[in-house]
Amino acid sequence: MTSNSTFNRIMGLDPYESGHLPVVLNYLYLLAMMAVIAAILTAAMVMQYAMGELPCSLCLLQRPAMIGVCFGILLQFRHGFSYQYTGVSLLFTVLLLIVSVRQTLINIYPRPGHAFPGSAIFGLHLPVWSVVIAVALLIAFAVQLAVLGGKDIQGARVSHYPLISKIAQALSFYVILVALINFVSVVLQCGFGACYTTGYALLNWM
Image (tube, rainbow, N blue to C red):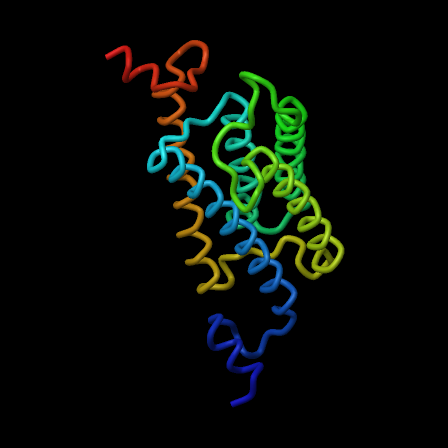
């Protein structure tokens, strides 16, 4: 059995069709990006609930920006590859960069009441990591469009690749779950007014 037929068998493809490789690589690339963002969001939620580190107002804006990046990728899984959906992810990536840079500049010089929020991870605080993540996402999308953005993948649907489609569905549902948990968390923390960083407004009110 040749390597090409093994690839087709694993991916559930018609062995008589060709041109699958660029499409498969594109969707695997998007899956990897979405999985990394999901892991980052999960780590942020763990730090909030397990370590008691409440996110600040600007931190709460960075999470929806990351979820928005995933939303653009999710649209590609659902409707097929489109530069329009890539643009959606890029817009949210720019939003993430703007918010995280603003927060980093606000707290770049330590002074009473304006220290970096949260613990440092590998020597960097979370707002600085958000800048790194945003730049990494911009580079990742640039590489995707430059290397895999040819005419062969335009309009290609992930549903034609059963294994990738199942993984994409599971990962998409997980990201949606994380987004819902984050929404509930924000409501508990901020209530319906100004956001609190010292406790959960609704729980304290109860």
